[in-house]
Amino acid sequence: MKIGIIGTGYVGSTTAFALMIQGIVSQLVLIDNDSDKAEGEALDLIHSMSFVHPVEIYAGDYKDLKSSEIVIITAGPSISKGETRLDLANKNYKILKEIIPKVMENNQDCILLIVTNPVDVLSYAALKLSGLDKSKVIGSGTVLDSSRFRAAISRKLKVDARNIHGYIIGEHGDSQVAAWSLTNIMGIQFDHFCKQHCDDEYDPVMKKEIETEVRNSAYRVIEKKGATSFAVALSLSKIVKSILRDENSILTVSTYIEDPYYGIQDVFLSLPCVVNRKGINRVLKIPLSTQEQQSLRKSAEIIKKYISHLE
Image (cartoon, rainbow, N blue to C red):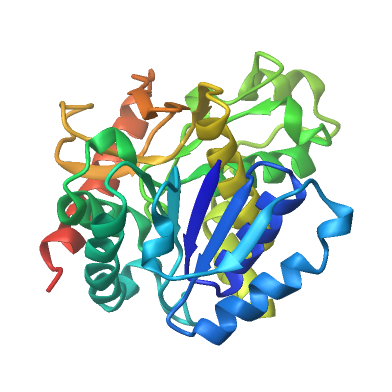
């Protein structure tokens, strides 16, 4: 189980650490334009070998991606203060245009896991640049946003986040959609749970507060520490584990919508998908309220707009 990571900044290096300590992979190759940075991260990880399951970690070049089952692309600048993910589109697209051909030259059988923002826009670009089947190009999508969503609900309701089932869909960004109609706590629909089991009197404004918190989560972290790293690394390790272990996990990864989905077509966005060794095995059609459908279509249009403006 060999994985390649391109880009050893905050996200790439933390993802390598998460994969290592969970014993998910047997080989891990780190690639970066700054070869010293990649080598330094590899050495730092190697020095902890006596504490983890055996894994071979080394800094390499694109030729070392041969036989990698998954290539994770995190390269490119992250969001700066005052920027949105979509502001990065052209800047990181230029980087992706250099990376993808080099990956394909050395490995045409891998699954591409795109993390670089704006992830929905760049996942679409990666599909076109690579020529891979749509099932093998995956954006990290709103897997992290969905976790943030559950964490926010957990704090409000004072219940374990692992007992909360809820998804953020659409763009990994400001137009993301909270699928409240699907949100439940141990099978109890959110509104009903709040009315029956909340300590405080139920207030529908709570939903807007949670949505705002989730939407601004990344910006708050960036403002405080400069970049997101730990949570996104764990979300990526969940995607990788689902692929390598053929788990058939349902994850809100960003995927190519080919057949019309609530009127949406020819765009990458996040929806609940079954993820296994094939990559994206299938996209689940989920029942959404009329308002949620409208919001999802609006999110898709925003992503399409930025795709059309790529240089």
